[in-house]
Every structure is written in structure tokens, then in C-alpha cells.
Length: 245
Image (cartoon, rainbow, N blue to C red; front, side):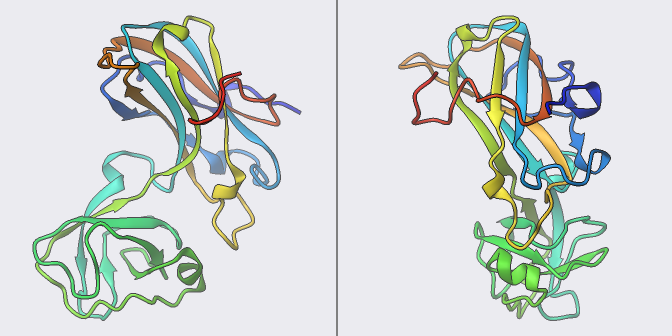
């Protein structure tokens, strides 16, 4: 059975009206508001429907991103390390579940035991703290394997890594006329190991402006709605490297 209704719409077309190289939708779909078994053995597809034609020369890539947070601001936060307890990171009211990937993106003096730019995984989270692990499997076990032995020079910046759940590949902007439908199949292999339900609380739409051959990207308009459906037909476009149907 296929569903398409406003309750499963993650973008209504009012915010993604122009291009700026890359952007996430400011609207999102809260997956806790739909059936609990969504994504448990079912095909999920994002349907991008163009409501205002793209203009200019360039390409567009549509993606669906899974996140545990609802705003762009919440994806990045100031955090302190080793705040009185070994291996502890403090990020007030972070809301990140175990297994969430995070990166230390900026720091004064790096906390001993960590590396800037490396992906770590949230382990044993509480309301305001968590530890770090090197793999999702270890993070889900609840026992961290990253030892933080000093705080470094606070405060540090932690970024929640977006999980790209599906991509359309690059599409020529002139192909995106009013009424064009692009289907992006969400990859079930992006589910976290050991988790048997859809692991992402929120879904965002994302677009990436690119180039067409040697012509610099100059896409100046475009508007669409995005729906999530179950058991939809085969996608019209495939990820980069595949032939366009």
C-alpha cells in the first residue's frame, strides 16, 4: 500500500525557494508521529515534486537526511570534555541517542585521547552528558572505548554528522519543470546495527547545487514539496554513477 498525505510531508515548498550551493530544509518530518513499524522491512521513498521550475544552468542533487535533532542550530554545539569525570563530554540537553555520530570540528587545545575531524559515536547518554566510542557497535554496548584523560582548552565544538539516507544523483536544472517528480529510495542499510526500528527521529530534505560540464552553477530558482511514502514504484533517477532511466 502506498501513502501520500500531508501528515507524511517533510517539506511544503515554502522554504526551499532558491539555491545557495547546499541547504537543508527548515521543515522536517517527525518519524515518531507515524506508525512505529515504518522502515522495519518496508521500502521508504522520498517523492520530490517540483512546483516552481528551476532556472539558470547547473545541476541539482536531492537527498534525504536522517537526524536526531530538529534544527540546524542543534547540529552544532559547544561542549566540554572531562568535566570532573574521565571520558565524559558535557553538552547541555543534547537529546542525542546512543550511536549518534559526532565530530570534533574546532578546538583550542584538543582533549587528550581525541582527534579533530574523526567521527566518534555517542555512548551511554544522559540528559546533559555522554561518552564516546570509536564504532557504533561499541557505542550501543554502553561501554565507551575512547579514553579522555584531559579537558584540553575548552570550549570545543561538536557537530552531529548527518546521515544521507538516499540521493537522486545530479540532475540537470533545466529538467526540473513544474510537475516533475523525482523519487529517491531510502537505503535500509543505513539502519544502525542492532536497532530493529527506524533509528532517525527526524527526516530533512536536502539539495546540493552543482555544475553542468564546465559551466559554473547558476541555478537561481526552484521550489518543490517532499513526501515520504511506503512501497512506492522504482525511482526515476539513480545515485551518481548509474544510468538515468
